Image (cartoon, rainbow, N blue to C red; front, side, top):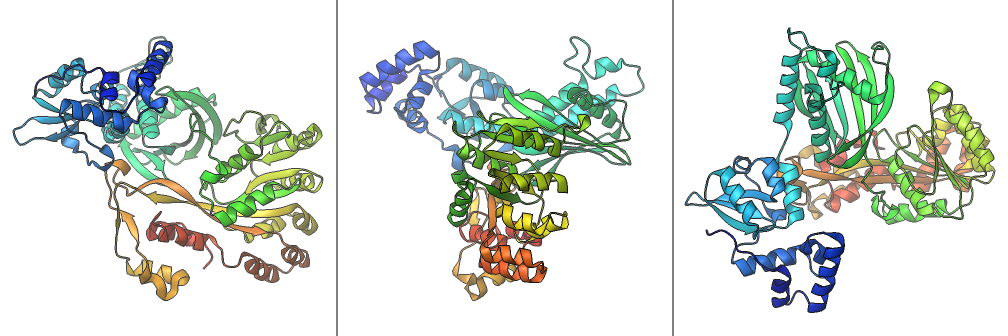
Length: 569
């Protein structure tokens, strides 16, 4: 295939009826003002879609347009073009043709320099295809897996820690010009890979025979590599220095945080160290500051839950609790609520450990136990600040819970979280903490319990036949109607790293403190309370909501079963 020819994009789109002369003139003015590519200006102004531009180029140049959403990449071919030029020239090796030539997808097939450089790298003749830039970059992020690179850097660090004397400052990248220190390169690559895979946590776990590095992706841990155990102390020391922890203390747990940039994206990292038998286990929670807050309409609440939740939020006082285990999305739900409630007419104060999201207009307080800035101490002062709405990050003890409930009883809307298995057990948990019955009955207006289930990958989703154990589990909710529905799973593809899942969705139940429920709390009979609360919920449990997502084709039966061990049977 001959090298590509230059095409005037604006003229091409006008010829094909996708753009008007006026729109081209306005776009050229915008391009001069901002310096952005003309094609990007067309898309951002809403004149033409990215797919429309790519298909127009394909028609003009008489080359194929490839939709990468339904394309399965071939790893052996993709590796013929390294990641750096693939990103620089927006190119991806797609296929090998019968005559040995390579089909290469380009977002700009008229780029002569890209054509020459790709031929130089792959050392073969190529045929071009057109792909959209956003789809190409998304696939590049998925297919260039860095697990091997992480393993290689770990081995490099092991070699540096051998018998040859070395300055520890150079090893850790603490001296000027030492940015290429092995541990620095290792951690940088680990953070980049974690962000690429949308990991929420990074785990460094020293074992007897190695240092295990794992990522938590969509709530499930995945092993990335096993490294030599001798690098554990160097990794721990570097991370402690980054987070301002005591590097001499290895016998006690420590908590801290630091900020980094990963490919220009600011990331807030919360770090926890824990002494174990073979060294310090380190877990880091990653909070991407470029990820916008979800609105309540987008957190996945069923309409019946969302309607009642919004009703509770509109009340001028009282307490609304969101419960569930660690990592179940409680904070995300509460901040979605705050985002909706936040206005210039209301004063909102949050008390958190740590502050996970930054929302303009809020007064956010970071708890600091080391200087006795505890939840209870902050809350006493907060109530003198005349707030309308108070968010308590977590009700960890009796004193914090009582202060929050008194605030809810005296004209404040209080939002908080609690670790319980379901909505019904929440009032009982509060009573077990030592909260007076009258306080629980009068202050708590609504309890929302939630979990997160993984969503089936839309690119490899397909029907499948239920296993016997899955049929038995579904029988509780569906009875004899099991065979009237179609069930789906993901077979695994490059888009979901062969897991069959991509992203997560919420599963919810709620308990409103109606007059009957309040009376049951005051009576002090747990059995009677449970009976009344179940009547109030009318069978709308976490388990039923999980089955709803299964029948909608959003998640699998196996995934619903995975998180159902805490559901009501």
